[in-house]
Amino acid sequence: MSFPLSSFCQATLARPVLLPGVGLHSGEPVNVRILPAPVNHGLVFLREDLPGRPRIPARTAFVTETTLSTTLGRGNATVRTVEHLLAALYALGVTNALLAVDGPEVPALDGSSMPVVRAVEAVGLALQAAPVRILRVVTPVSVVRDDKRVAVEPADAPWIRYQVDYGHPLAGPQAMRVPVERDVLVREVLDARTFCLEVEAERMRAMGLARGGSTENAVVVHDHGTSTPLRHPDEFVRHKILDLVGDLALTGCRWIGAVSATRAGHALHVALAERLEAMAADVAVVADADSAASPEAVHAP
Ligand SMILES: [Zn+2]
View (tube, rainbow, N blue to C red):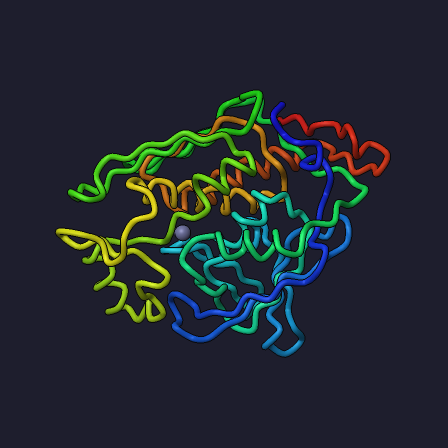
């Protein structure tokens, strides 16, 4: 197993973190505060601008929309574009945190997860005396819609392989396979930014979306270039892996298996997360503080 020991313990932030910004789609200023939370709390959003300060767990049961980004909702409270924040927290091993936002969307920041990574690394983690929930995939699962596919197979360690092809000279076939390990994700994946083709950007603006989009937080792919220099020649497939890590964090588990995705998006990512979560629900989950150093894996089904 390639996890460092700390990955087996639940963890929260040593101190609160504040990240101000604007919502990519709303264009409105919005802040997110990442606050320490107790053992077995999980990752939970809080709409602190709404009456009653409603809380929305970052779990698949609360996904309300998967168009362009992943939206969570409970009653009238929603939080849009949760995936980049969740990807950073999953990669860093943060299992418990209260994610307080004062608007309906997580700030876009630079369009990647790196601002969250740097902010969390600056305050550090507090390890907690309880094991994480580990979901070891023992039965292959796949979800196919048209030419899009996600699947997971048993493996000794968590992997993601992703293939995309946007049929564009600058966004043609790209493929990447990475181990889902903190250092690899931070170095290779979490700095990859949100992107879209120019035609999509125009369509989104016509729909009243992407109002906060700019060269500061997204890459627009034109016919003969990109709106801002790329951070990697294959930044697009790397961002898709980032999105998938964030969407699979909605299982509430550390998962172990070999995930592959072809031309997928948030809808398929969340569908796979639901299948994984259903596996985890079938089995008892060990949450015994004494076993923190060597927790039992949850085997599924
Ligand atoms: Zn994304």
